[in-house]
Length: 312
Image (cartoon, rainbow, N blue to C red; front, side):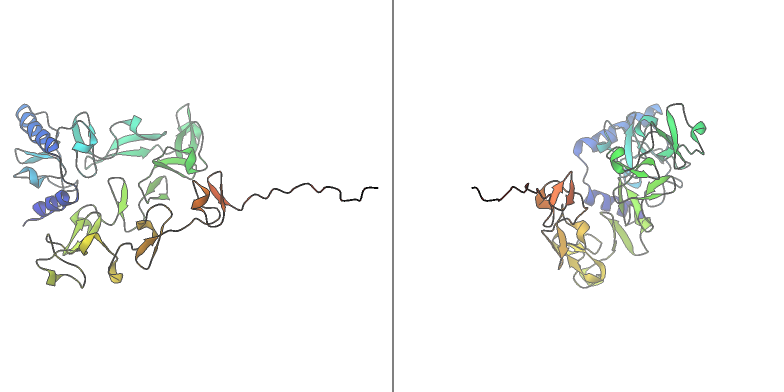
């Protein structure tokens, strides 16, 4: 099985396509190819952006792209759900990136297209307010609308406050210089920081499945103890997570558990938030009260002292 078809297999297993989406892609590929309407897409050898995009079938192309005259071209779409990994729907075409125009970006950012055809929100850098538009200010080296932020609550739901500026931030992202991005060793995939997005993000002999690198295999004997080989790569049985040297478990750390639960002895158990942590109700806190959505010491109401003198 060649690399392109193996990538397609992993994508289909991790996120099955709807029949309508597939039919829409095929139909647009035929119409767009005939009328010359499709946008040429260049893809890497493993299905990611970059490199020469030669193809012989649609399965050789990334996401929902279609093969037209040996070149991967943008597929027709109506919503982002019709597109593939790291793609969005712009003007009825699936494109790589996170924005279609400047209006999709945070204040002070513009939607730029790089040399690989990936459209991303890029901050407008500045040294002072004069470098920004009239309704913007310079915050931490980047132009922002209205005012600088001080906490994440000053920004949109999918943004984080980094050095006074709001940046679109992937889940698990960290603040960097004029950006919010995945930490070293992680890559952004569909808005989340994961170990891998494509097979090329993994070491030789490994494949990318559900954001993690797993060993390729032919039989169960090719896998480490406790893993099995159902579809050409080593995975934990029964939906368990692969925790590396710790083996398969229901959770590897607290991030694998819902809400305030914690991971203890490889399973998620009820947990509680400590003083200063975020909360919704008192039950979220460890023997504390949830005051203004923060776990805090209970408020003590002191009753006034009344006189106790004897009556005559």
